[in-house]
Length: 376
Image (cartoon, rainbow, N blue to C red):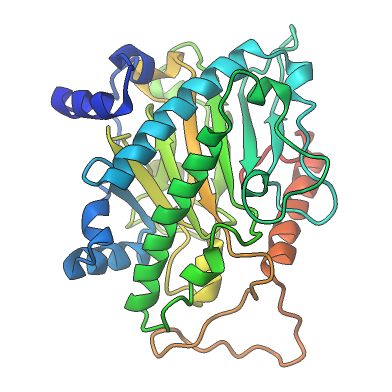
C-alpha cells in the first residue's frame, strides 16, 4: 500500500476526504507492476533542464509517466479539482436514473465524441453493470459554443459549473507546459505544439468521468480482461489521468508488441500513486513527430486484489489539436522526413478524430456493443 504519509498528504490537499472515500482498499503487493518515472510539475514549470530532458526521454520511449501534483500550486489546485470531480461523478452516476443520463447525447455530424453519456451494458434491472462515463466538452465554456446545447440537469443542478470550467483550464495549462517542453526538445520553433492547443480554440478537448463497477473477488487466473477497455491508444495529444484504484495496465518495456497485440504475461499494472496524475501522449503526437514521440498502448481491467470489489472512478483530462490543425509530421532535424505523395489528402484534426470515432463505432456495432463505448 502507498505510504501512509503520502496518502495523508494527498488527502490534506484534496480537502474534506476520508481515506475510505478515495482509497477503500490497498493495492496488492503480489501483482506485476511497472516502474514509471516520477516527473516534477514544479521543475517543468520552472524550466528545469534536467527534468525536461527526463520527460522527453520518457515520451520518446514508454510514453507514460507520473506527474507530481503536490509540488506546485497549479498541481495542488488540479489535484483538489480532480478529487472533487471524482466525488461528483460518484454522486451523479449512482443517483441519476439511466434513462435520464442517457439523454445526454453525443453531438451528431462530424465530431470527435467530446460530449455525452455512455453505458456499456446493463443488468436485468436496467442498471449499468460494467462501465459508464460522461464527457463534458471544452466547447461548453471555451471557444465556439454549440447552440442549443448545454449540460443536462443531472449534471448542472446543485453544481457550480465553474468547477468544470476550472479543471478544464487547469488541465490545459499542464498539457501545454508538457507540449512546450517537447517542442523545445525537438528543436521546433516555439509554439509549434502549444499554439495548436490553446484553450479558446475549438479542439474537442474534454473532461471525462468514468465508473468501472466492482465485482466479486476471484483468483488471479480467473480474472477476465474483457470487462474494461481493450488494448488501445488515445486519439488525443495529451491525456492526464487521475485514478485512485488499480485497473490501468501497460506493456512491459521489454515486451514484443505488434500493433495492439500484447501477450497476456507482458501486461504490467500501473500503481496509482497518491498526489500524482498519470500522463501519456496520444496518437496526435506520434503523427506530428513521425513516431519520435510515442503514443502509449494501454488497457483497463478490473482492479486487482481487494480493490476489485469496489467501484473504480477515474477523472480524465484530454487535450487535442485545434480542429484545423493539419495532421502531418512537422519539420525538424530530429524528426524523420515523411515522403508522402504530393496529391495525398492531409486530414485536419477534426476529420482525423471523426474518422477514428467512426471506425470505433463500426467495430462496436459489429460486436454488439453500444456505439461509442470504446475509449478514444
